[in-house]
Length: 216
Picture (cartoon, rainbow, N blue to C red):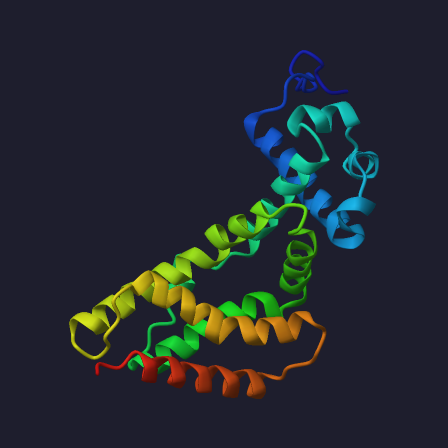
């Protein structure tokens, strides 16, 4: 028989560690987002979300004041999880400016072209009339790093005399709207857009953008 005086005592229940609390919070936001993606804001309920993560409604409300607060937190969480990191953005730099812009545009489009990215974007588009701030949240997290990276490149090209751009941040935002938004809207509408079609549209728009930015 084992020596009872030396056997390890069972762990005592107590307050969760910071890591455990963080893991539970992420689990809550993961499952809440899935409920919102599947049912929309109106269809999802705190009761169902709480039951899905084995929490009480009181515990959920202690973390998030109401369903609207939980929705905002879940969308922000989902956006952060799918956001492109700085290394991936920097890796779009190519030998030529045109190829760099093409690579950056394709990277941004790819974020939405994947099924989970499309689901999140559709949810944001659908609920933006109720939560206009989630558009800004998505932009700040998912789009702004790419825009800032592009603005830096446009400033460099302007300083070297190869482009003539007065406001690099504005130009970078216009580029994203002009080159990226079209294919993204097409994809979100449920239409199939193959890689060759995306590449052809992007390259045409990139050349048009660069032509308009040439020194006069």
